[in-house]
Image (tube, rainbow, N blue to C red; front, side, top):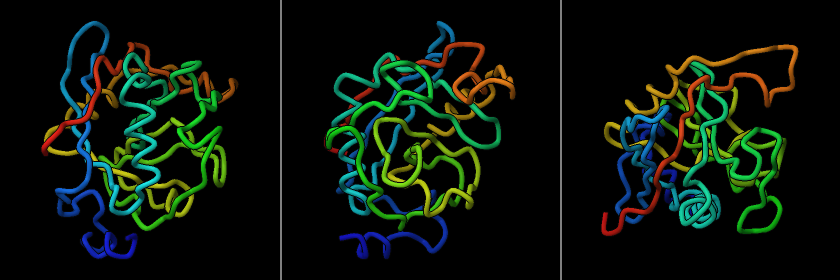
Length: 195
């Protein structure tokens, strides 16, 4: 399965790979402050990393990602969410596979903006937290599992989150650094059927 999926991508261009009609399509409706700013539509790479894609689809979408904040925003790098327990980067929420699950593979690379990737605390520590790349991030390759990408104009919504002012204090633990000063909320989420 993994090798077949790798052949569907243009070499080195995972953020622009041809769509796979068999992959799940999911969405987040985003608000910044009290203002709706748009929908982020995402293709999950179930053809490449089925276990990771299913964890995101099943664990996060039905209940948990709704109401979740993008709690870490680093301009020209990434936006991070998925902590639906504490609202910070130190919470290690369990996955559908237990407390954490292994890195499935590193076939897909961080080749550009709009890629979904697992946040972790070292090898084989995946849970519910994820990030979206805002640029190419090759230093993350073989360390974080890429499991999907933003579709259509969803990247414009990512850019709106990325542009929110943040509080940065290098003297504090990472959970207090790079916090948006305005709440960036997943107001609604779900799967789009019959894509």
